Image 1 (cartoon, helix red, strand yellow):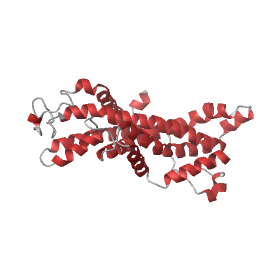
Image 2 (cartoon, rainbow, N blue to C red):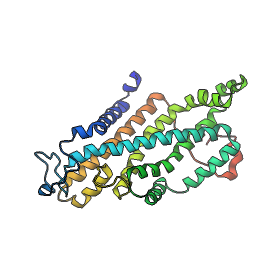
Image 3 (cartoon, helix red, strand yellow):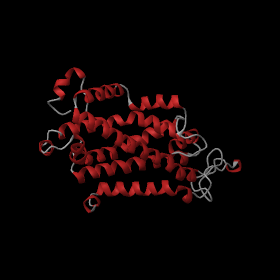
Image 4 (cartoon, helix red, strand yellow):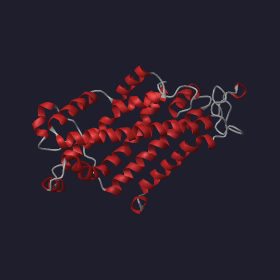
Length: 289
């Protein structure tokens, strides 16, 4: 950890992420007002007094809604990243280590999902499931694991030809033991760095879908929904829009800086990953992606 905190990028990203995580956990305690309380006597009030960032068109405290909305945005991001990392690692390790039939099936799934932008597929799935934070998380999990899977597949294909894996096979170790005790620890640092960098894209995806009404159900607070609420008053009450944008920028910057710092500290290289067409399947057995 000393080496990690010696890296300025990681330190800055960790501090930002830690503070935002604390806000997400204790936003309800830190909020100066009830984020759901409607007060038509104080609609679109300017910053000051009991409302440090003013109020929205329903008289609700903007600061309180941002503090409580952090839990929805960052909690959904953490949930999506944990699932996509776990499932993507599993699929990528199976495809990369065993190859042949397993690799072929997973490659077909990856090719189909990669044919469309992930955010568009998530939009379609979320639209079918309907608005709601849980449905939004399901939609993103359904498509976001592809990047983790193709990364893990490439790294596993490269690792299975390394000396320590061949030595384990020569000693009679089973496939499960080799994957969990040899290959997984070898590729896990790269996958952790990839997930940290990918978290910023997940935040953007969650906020984008919430912005168009496919996230939390009103009147629950969330940063993307706060952006949508504020856009109609960007000229008369710009602090509403600016505050929501600053929250999103800080979250994205925190994860991005932490990922860049981890990449430097762990000295990992994230290769360019691409899924080749099946007609070139013979070449896949001879070279990494």
